Image 1: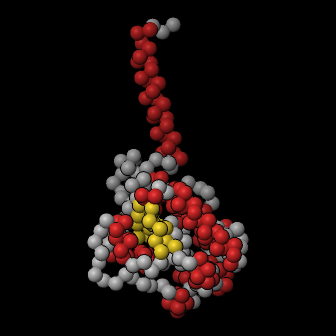
Image 2 (image 1 turned 135 degrees about the vertical axis):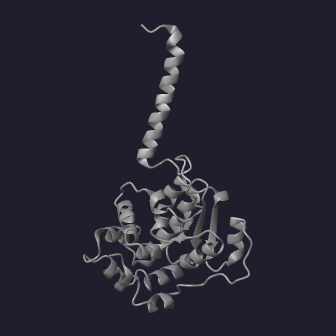
Image 3 (image 1 turned 90 degrees about the vertical axis):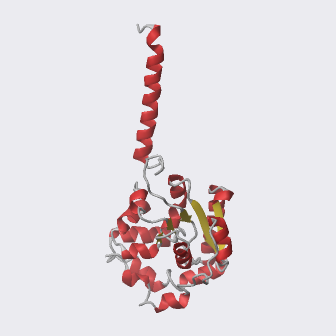
Length: 253
């Protein structure tokens, strides 16, 4: 029988062991924040808005304000190795988000917006921007660009690498329950996503940014000065369609 004089020591050992086990589990499960890991990475802004809500213009705006580089779908096509991370995420596998996003200070658009909740927990100091627009106008823009028949066929074909297929299948099919071509259903998914973000993210941490709002609400939210230059306006439907038939021609190999 252990003497009573050793009980405090045993209790301390048990408490330290429990905390150590909890820490190891959180590291293994990917739920520990970068700050807790003692890393120096800074990720300031998480974009929760779907594609075709002015995300490429928002990327340019954030970079102009000093929150760059900003991650966007275009980064996946610039860096084909990134598709492996997004493919794993789409399949429900563990992803080293800090490694994927190292060097970036912000991120918007698909595929990143699909994981806003996980990222908001990993980077608890980061602010969240939910870009929105009139829902049926969004649906029309989406189907004239990213979800056009040509792009959908190209990005989901068997000739596309498995990771890219998984990433695009989650965006184009799973997100919309296989009904991305049904306007009312897609718009409902769009609206439900907005409400879910508002429910998940604390109001003081969230900016709901309407396309066309310009610099003022963005700069006020980020506590930075309003630039004298016009707010970026890029990647309109016409511009998208003019770029060599769409994004599938630049897909990761």
